[in-house]
Length: 241
Image (cartoon, rainbow, N blue to C red):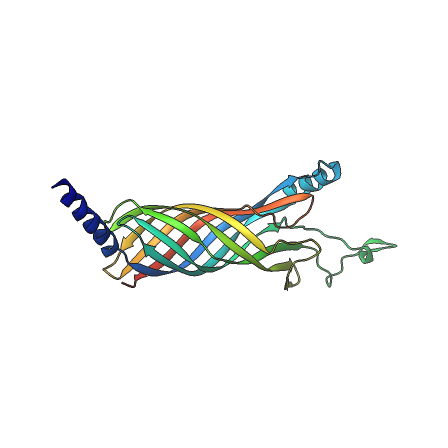
């Protein structure tokens, strides 16, 4: 009898597990505040001074990401997720005002030249293609269902987008890399807490607060610069089977 029960369980458990497996796809869009950490890896006083200047003149900024997820349910509450996204992560520089140029200084003192900019703001964003790999634990199967998610995102550095804004005009340039040795591959860890809302058997809406940290330095240099961001992702999910 005991042997028969064990045999039945060995048949029933895999049947129940695989019978619950289904897959789905998401479209997601996120808004987040992004910034960076700076660390002196050389103990050089000059480098430390540069870090202090940067920390006093650089600010966090609003950024975005969008893309698609593929989800595979392994059990009633456990889901694996992957996908592909385009993400913008960066920061801005403190706005400079009341700029004066050498050509404005003459024998009679300062003479304002309206053809020259007198305000300047720089915005720098780094674009990545990311491939998230995450585990999601759904706390219930109700219409409103909270969940916890953790994972990593191997990310490919694509380009640097720099926007220069003055009181006269604005200009945007893109450049891959720069004067430093940029790391093309980044490993990004993330954790989030969110809620699913089931519209029907096929569609769900979801939202989640999320925090990400780039374990990989942006550039191989005496100043270790690691990007991070936190914000909100929203999306719509369609069940495939």
